[in-house]
Length: 107
Image (cartoon, rainbow, N blue to C red; front, side, top):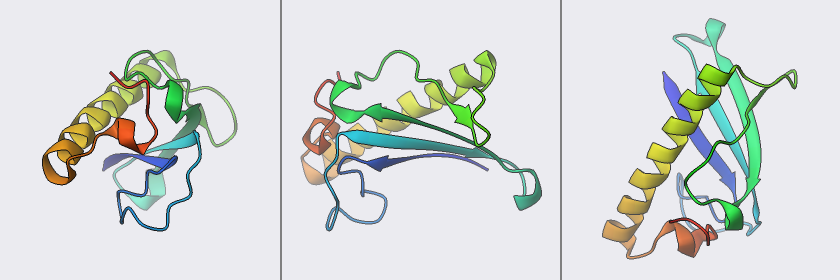
């Protein structure tokens, strides 16, 4: 199982777009594993208004150490792909984009 989730800004899309607290600070969580016994967690934070959809964000394990460069690259690729699909979904289904959710610099 692999997943990436965004928390912050107006990013309550996963459940609903109501009752969200608007904040420019976004917390990104990455989780991977095949069972609860071997799950890996990494997290980062960024400013939604500055995220362009390009570049690399540094992720850290729960103990505060930075993830390895290869994993950092893989997580960022997954996050960029998630943004692309989310932007497409928002445009097609709701006629809005990630820019409308606070990601003003997103390409």
